Image 1 (spheres, one colour):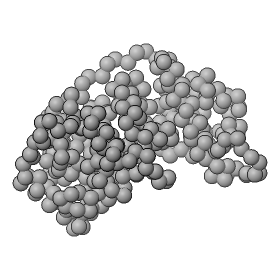
Image 2 (cartoon, one colour):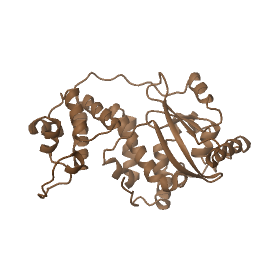
Image 3 (cartoon, helix red, strand yellow):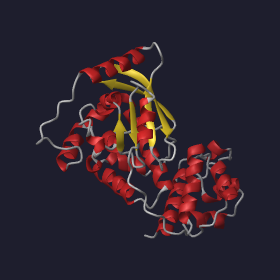
Image 4 (cartoon, rainbow, N blue to C red):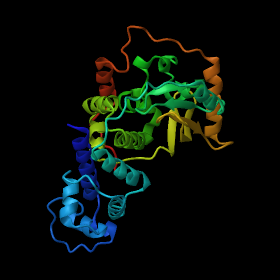
Length: 324
């Protein structure tokens, strides 16, 4: 599939999925009770709300029209009740569908000294540096202890074996337990961020490979991927349960790193004086006091087939994910 046809297909799939998740009442239309062949809004209803012809909207959904203006896209975003992240995603998909010159190969992701200095500014607060595909490029001691204390702390320094937070969330039983009851929401956020990423960079083979691997190894990921939801990267609140310091309600701040081509710094905080704040302080002291003990070299690795099989047993892939 060419980049142009892929972009057109992705745009059509996104429009169709968002249309299917709306009811006439949700967008202010009167529902006369007549039976509908498929759930959600009809194409003619979306066209009416956006002020375009039904024929033109149909061409957009079928990928036969690649020249939608910014004004038309904004009208469609309003008609489909898209939030800011979804609106940006719609524009990205439309841009991906247009013919464009081949993009130059992106340089390998690496953490520079200014990036490490930025991470150091946050002191003992758990912090990790994430690449475009959610690979962990670096973490401080607290970040390693909070998110992946069961993994080698030096693993981000080896590009071939870097941890990937999307894989951890869907394929790692430890991470599933870390988020506990909030895991379904975390899973949706991870998928939504990957949707945003591929909308911005549809030609990235590494990103396509990651999505394919997750779809093959996690039924839950495949189901969520089919919903075409997108998420912003800014701020999220989760209740985490760490095996060393217990339950805590934390905020995960995602900050873009200047001049880094998509790299972001994720910093975890808690309300000052709260039990969660005390737990994070304890975790920081513990991470400095207890050295990492390397696992048995014969133990299965995170990305091995045996690990995926064991994780699938520990974490049933068919478990239902609550709807929002």
